Each structure stands twice: as C-alpha cells, then as structure tokens.
Length: 188
Image 1 (cartoon, rainbow, N blue to C red):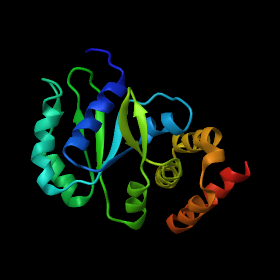
Image 2 (tube, rainbow, N blue to C red):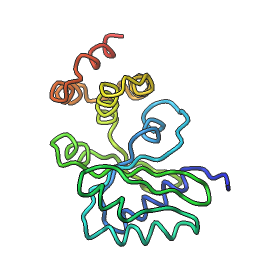
Image 3 (cartoon, helix red, strand yellow):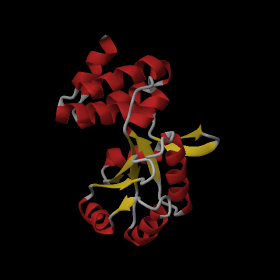
Image 4 (cartoon, rainbow, N blue to C red):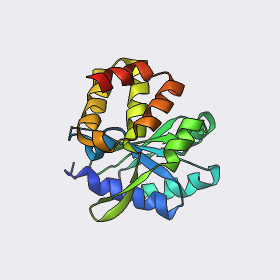
C-alpha cells in the first residue's frame, strides 16, 4: 500500500464535494491539526449536507479516486435515511474517510454556516470553526468519556484560545448540556 500524505486525499475529496455542490465541513482529528496541536489521526471526518439526488454522483466520483477503493451506495442511502455515517476507503493508501450526514438540528446547521476556509496544499478546504470543534468534542466526551476528546479540546484552547468567541461557546455549551466541562477547561 502506497504511503500518502492524507492531505492529498483530503483535498481530492474536498474538490469532489465542491464540484458536486455538496456543502461540507472537515472535523475530527484533521480539524484538531488545524486549530490545535498536531496529533496522529487514521482517518478523515467530514460532515456533509447530502441530498438524495447527490448519492449516485458521489459514489461514481469517489470510485474514480482509485481502483481498489471501497464505497457502498446502500450504506450511503441508509446513512441518508437515518442521519448517520458512511465511509469511503481509498484503495491505494487505505485511508478511510468517514462521512457524517448533517442532522438538521440548530447546532448542526449553525456549525455548517460557520465553516472556515483554510488553504491545504494550495487548495481551499472548509473546516469546522474552532468553537464548534470544541463543542462537538465536548459532546463526544460526554457520550464516550474518552480522554482523547478532552485532550483535543485542551489543545484547541491552547493554540486558538485567544481567537475563540467565548460568548458563542458558552451559549451553545449551555444548550448542548456541556457547560460544566467547558467551565472546567476555562478555569484550568
């Protein structure tokens, strides 16, 4: 399997989504690399605002990224119906892209509107804002109690802290039920 900088696949997938006019944001470990400290991540996480009519073109176009790549149309349709997750595995590198279908909740819609363009390998790629990354990670921490999520939040605070919109953070943390953990981080 060829070693490949995941940023190349990230920009290729981003270009596909932009060409197909599928709104998206990069989140997860790759977003932590942008807003926090570098850390190992084995996949690429993308939230997509998918329409049913985009599914066939998305399957076809992602399949063109490599001979041995894996994408399952039925899995995408199921994820679309339930607002869940589907994935794409790049055959040449084994890099997995996890796609999360946007849920039409106020927070999800807000974080999609607040996306931030960054240049990756001279290509425009849209990322979740640092505030929304923190809020998402606090939600994941509440569900899983995985220390990885708190470590990610701490690194985003350390690197991007002075630029964060604290009013926005506190407002949504209260609505999402994660204000106690946010306050603990702010005090430390």
